[in-house]
Length: 167
Image 1: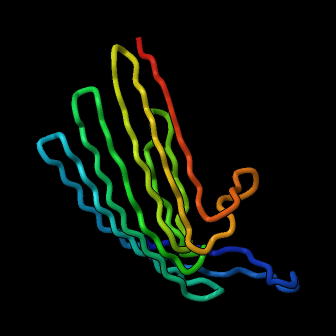
Image 2: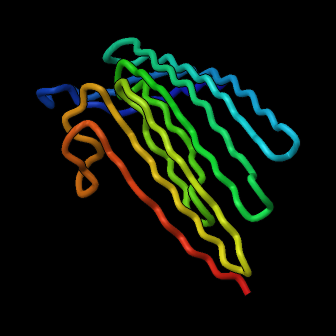
Image 3: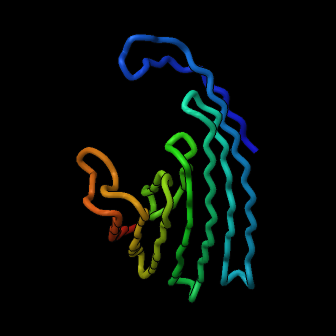
């Protein structure tokens, strides 16, 4: 359970009034982790947020299921699927995702949609191969991302490959 209370400067739409607005945000999270014979690992997470802002009250929820399978001592296959729905940017949720050594992602989950990824890690003679395909979909979006990272449409896909050599 997390509670956030924030005072922030604001200007109204016509830039006529300024002031300080007080916002509260309440998060609750439940997580269940399981392992089966040190070969198969799963994680289920459900999170809910309630934001009390100057614009109004907004809710957001997400549910995710992740699975990692150690097929052998050198090969790991895994993935995660997350469904999310939020009423406003102020009730958005963030999800930490480990990609590969020195690479993480913390995508914002706002609006309504899903996010998923599939990954493979293989180790052989000091080499480590990491491959990851991810997809982020929002039902009513015309554009994903912002600025230089903007993608037209309601689906963003990415493919990541990393090769590490340790000696």
